[in-house]
Image 1: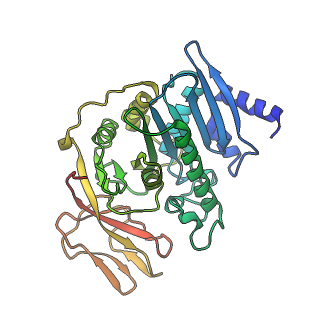
Image 2 (image 1 turned 120 degrees about the vertical axis):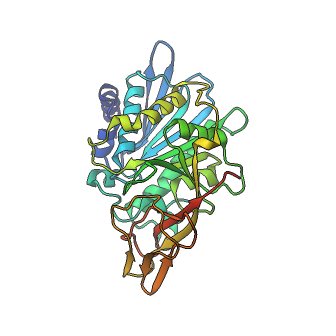
Length: 357
């Protein structure tokens, strides 16, 4: 990419504000990173396009308090979070949203976005924390992308400086679920290795319309767990409803999180209200059911919603000769998918929980 192309791309982005189209036109990579500046009457903002689907905004000559990562499109058919991030980027590029904090936007899997598919060869959200290089190594686009996304997040947080009383690191990995849910919006709070769960973050989610929290109690290879474990960030997998095609998402369904994200980016000390544990529905993961056989089946209909519970003894799944049954009152299903690759998670069960750590 020569200087002329860089100038052209910068001008096009400034005029259109359409970073999503730029990403989709260059799904594999861009020739080189480039930087330009936004100038308003009140501030200057540095904009860095680091790769396809990777764009960073940083206020110049202004002390910031938060380093924020907003990721979407880790699964290419989950369009609502992609549209949310694209709109925020457009408003920043056009000076319609004042930036007070550093923010990194990531469109996770551009080739899958173009295909309208969950992934191309392998589930990207099972390839973090080094899983991309396990076994067969970096043999496909998703594995290489996972490694690159890890590097971009590490660099972003490192450049922001050390965390402490006056600085925090945040990562919200935005998704939508394959099927509907009794709790339409919910978040997975990754395993914290004994650190207390952050009540301010829980209140941010509640103010965002996400009042159901699933507490994970073991390490995983998801994107949000990577940021918690390796970058000491507050991070969450945030599910914002059901998968729909581009253009079929109702903006009103996301009005609360659109409001809170704008406050997070544009205010020094946003007010998300007082924490009240009674306003949250808390669950914890009880069982992880992996598919190990070709003849794996789920014993409930495709339209059964997340957080549906079943009576004790009900056989949820058959994995070859192995059966998986409900064993506790209130035990419910989440993220069922019988079509995953062998060895991957086909279903979780969850039970009601209390906030401890």
